[in-house]
Image 1: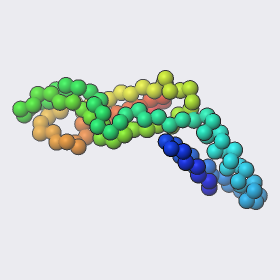
Image 2 (image 1 turned 180 degrees about the vertical axis):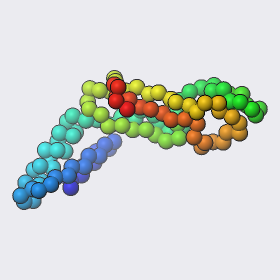
Image 3 (image 1 turned 90 degrees about the vertical axis):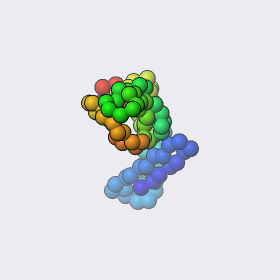
Image 4 (image 1 turned 45 degrees about the horizontal axis):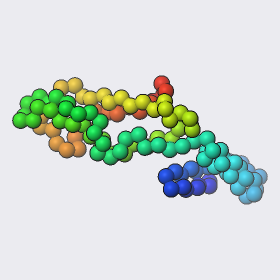
Length: 116
């Protein structure tokens, strides 16, 4: 196994059944070169980013709230596919108070084209 790190990306290459360490190194180098040449990593959602504003809440004093991302979401995709990134937020039906910070209120689906 070989790994290579760049400031915002890391790629790991695993080679099997290499004849010797030189062959293993060359195979891993080709895989790593291909990975950095053809793939990129993108942040599609930042931690605490507002995903949807003014979502209706049933019960309680607050009638609406903003939905925020719990964590950063980063994906790896082929270079050139960046414009095909699409996000869909699926909220639980009938959000009812009390709702506490950190409660899971839905799921964010990230697509590259039609692939989730």
